[in-house]
Length: 153
Image (tube, rainbow, N blue to C red; front, side):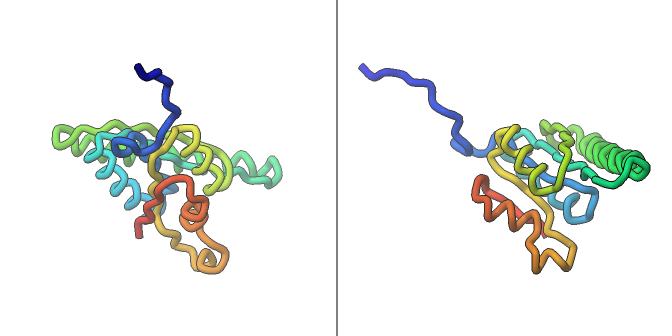
């Protein structure tokens, strides 16, 4: 007779159940979202679309316009995703959620992946030249070694 113990949370045992994709409205992030959507559809996983809203430490006078601009970006991204899912309705069925986190992109995606118990993280490659020297969000996520990370060009 064997004793049954509840097993701890285990990532990726039967394929991914939650795929987190980081989006910011850039071309590469939207390609990453499309790629992640295909993965999620084929794996019957939940696609968690995450927008990390930057927190500016500027004065209060600048804070409100910046917050409004980032809110608009988030609303645009949700509208684009809804439009894409409506166009493909009937072709494939897919579950997705949109989440907004605050902070810098790396820490926001780490927090999102942890909270959502992500099995995989998908991000777009950085388009900024300075990231070749300092390191991009994608490189930092890969180096963290906590999830499989796919970087979409």
